Picture 1 (cartoon, rainbow, N blue to C red):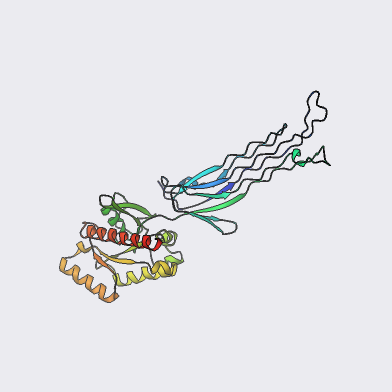
Picture 2 (cartoon, helix red, strand yellow):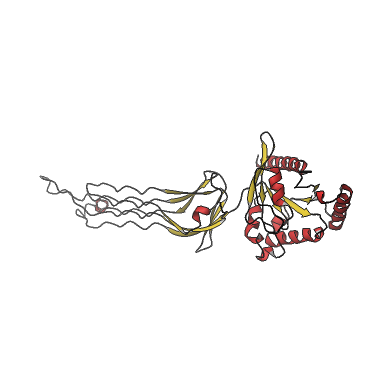
Length: 342
């Protein structure tokens, strides 16, 4: 299925039903008085987070969602039925903006969370409501109001624990395939990953985390070059970033690291400051001694003071050590959050 991470929709709250003017007309009751009932309230439109949905593909063609209108009032003081609310299922991680005002309406991060996006119209009142000691035969009623209309922009931010970043062909997709059941496309040309891919990495029984493979960044991504700017926001929710670097002789790993760091900084300084581990990949493309020498040179030139892992995503060498370290770190971060909230 094609990944879709942005969509626009129109939502309409139901209109409120009108109140009516009516008088009681029964045999032997000459002065029945007013009996016009109120209208029903229009239905509301809600967006509901659903973990079973993982893309916005169902919204790729401009859809309109309308809640049910309230019914008009009836004689004999009968109130019209209120319109049913409309629930629209969206993926967990959907951010909702008003296209007309730019207002952030809400962020759906929990399965089952509901967000009101269009309020139904208020009901009108019948002429019974206007009856008084000085107005025995009121002939006025009010009309129901229209429901809200909103033109919404939906954006999907993936909910992953770990994000993979790096230049095209750094080996991110290969690593995800190696550690999880996800099957992102792997080929010997750049930009084989055209949309984010999620994979569940199982470390041991009841211990797993979600990893996101983000399309490769290039210099200028934060200004819109390549594919990166469209997907950089997906790693804003991650607790940890893994920065994959190709250590083969084909490129300049030090320059590559600076390029990605610069793009993260330009896109969001908080994202650039997030904990990021350096993962030196493709150690299988040279001898062990040459790989160690190459890695040492890269780290010395970078002056890197964070955690470093040497792996071969293709052969699997070092990947399980990396996965266990990531799981342990995520457990620590979760414990820190729990302690701060206690």
